Length: 88
View 1 (spheres, rainbow, N blue to C red):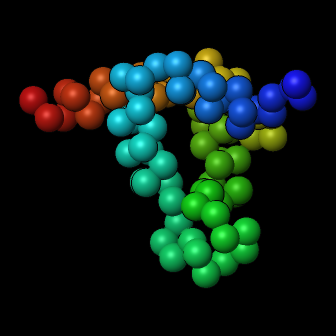
View 2 (view 1 turned 90 degrees about the vertical axis):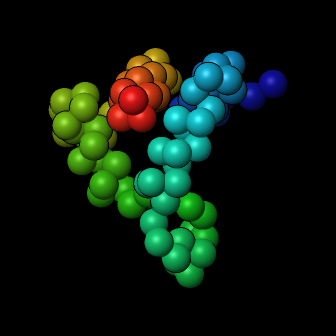
């Protein structure tokens, strides 16, 4: 079996935590560019410059190092708690 990429490890980490699925779906929807289907690569992925900026503000450095799946899980936990607090 080939080794997982960063995206594969992140998907596996999220799949193992069903309580984070709604937060992950919500974040995906928020980060999805409008009319993404009209631009290559024809996938609902956020703009690379935006992702790099978010990495810089969250993790420091120049934004080129990929986030670890633990970073993603912590961020989704924060999103889940924040949206829960906003609902009360």
